[in-house]
Image (cartoon, rainbow, N blue to C red; front, side, top):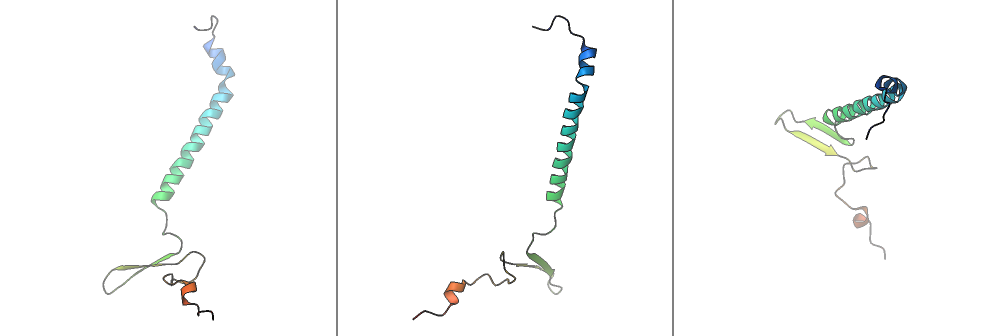
Length: 86
């Protein structure tokens, strides 16, 4: 059931600010999504990794640092290397 006295032109004029706001917010969301996708596709190397290329063999070596340290020596547990308590 529709309204008996509908003036489409007048309703369009009255709702113009609301429609402009909806279109503007959709545009902003679209720009944010495009930026997010482009960043994830073309993002730089992960933080904490340095990539070097061996000139002799052409292989790429990746050195990974443990979070919160400045050393790549992540294979040993500090508790296991501590001297035994008497």
